[in-house]
Image 1: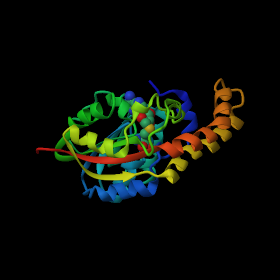
Image 2: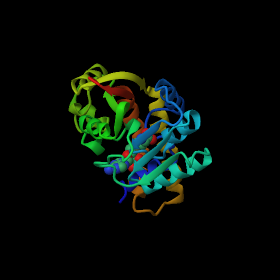
Image 3: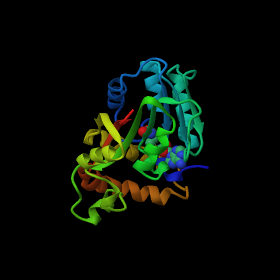
Length: 250
Ligand code: SAH
């Protein structure tokens, strides 16, 4: 089981597979007031940067689950590199329907809510692994500016304008699901550049090393078109943030 190979190529050098920067990931860890020994569950943990750095900086323990064997391997390597391999573990597998045996202080899905069928489904799934008083973390795009046309939304690689909400509406939607929003850290265009522009050098170098690969034409095409698409669409219209939620009525 694996994710489509194109991601393993374009994001092979990424430590963070989202527009959040290492600095903002650190800001988020501090904002959550993590305590040593806190347990963090991360569905769609990618290359594990959140768990590994929080283990180093805050002494958390935790588990990440990700479908990509490559990213999971990178996560394990990163844990060893940061000296936190005894605190965090990474499992290569499908996170659909995953409920942890041990309740988490923080149950997170940062940029992979489709695993739960969308934001609402993911919150519901994470809540099943959460201890009372714990925090659900959701990383999700929103519209910085509402696209004027469906064409522009597609240029942002959304299937339609309805895929995402504006920031006020997204925040309100958490309330409608019965959650208080208790913190948030938002990405900005510099963060988007780190996520998107980093793919370009990776693609270029991959093409030089793999000119005859069956995906070479696709990657060549992307390298030629992505810069302009990204600058005209994603960078202008799409925001992204991580939202910390606590169920109401506890
Ligand atoms: N949270 C990480 C990764 C986000 S990218 C970060 O912020 O860096 C989305 C991740 O979801 C990818 O690593 C991809 O491999 C993973 N993924 C996609 N479908 C999945 C599934 N069904 N189960 C587990 N992981 C999945």
